[in-house]
Image (spheres, rainbow, N blue to C red):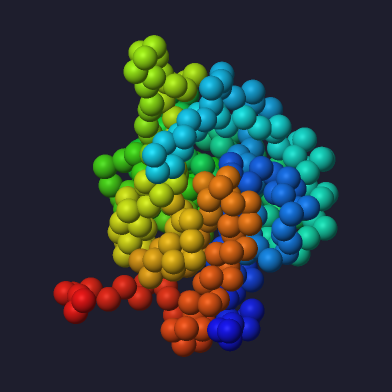
Length: 314
């Protein structure tokens, strides 16, 4: 049996937020963090990023909302959620019973909404950090996503930072020409860390009916299909900014997570894998510990940015 390294060799720090290990759940794929508490020990997770929260409840898009793809899935949930107040009243008390950092993913349609969410969260005990989803439409700019424009992205970060002292993570969209440019912009605006990537925009068509398979026509593609794109973007961003990078996109196994950290990520988030295996995060944590033991890595930070460039001898 492989001798696993002690738990303290797995801890990481993300912009002042201390995690016992680098594996977190990805927003929108683990509910509000309480749905799976009876089938896994939530205390083993590095962190729980809850489903995206808005100021008021949102019903989401019309069904169908999910379509399976050959190597992943498309979703068009439409950011359905119960709103920040209901979350704090009904879900957070349960999460506070666990020793795991809780990260609130937030979104809005104006800079003011983001700022108000940050203001409310700042005084809430039990929410340890904020992840800002900037893939949302800016209603004041004709519906263009905040995350596709450096100035708009920076303005959102400034609005959030002006209203909270908690760690602020900005979740970047891959649907841009240069993700590194957006990353630099939000870092300059005060982001403590960035997470990437969010889903890639895609669609599916039923050839027999000639109709879209999603009620919203388009949706977000996730899963193994996007891993090579996400891995490349994490590598680019890690070289472009000095703040921690959290890797997301098609992480199904411990080997996938290790690859993202080698590319420069300080931590990872696991999303679509949880739909296939609800215990995926735990399996990945154990698998990463096993990898470290086999490769004689004293601490998980030894993996970060350890990519060896040059011709392979294989």
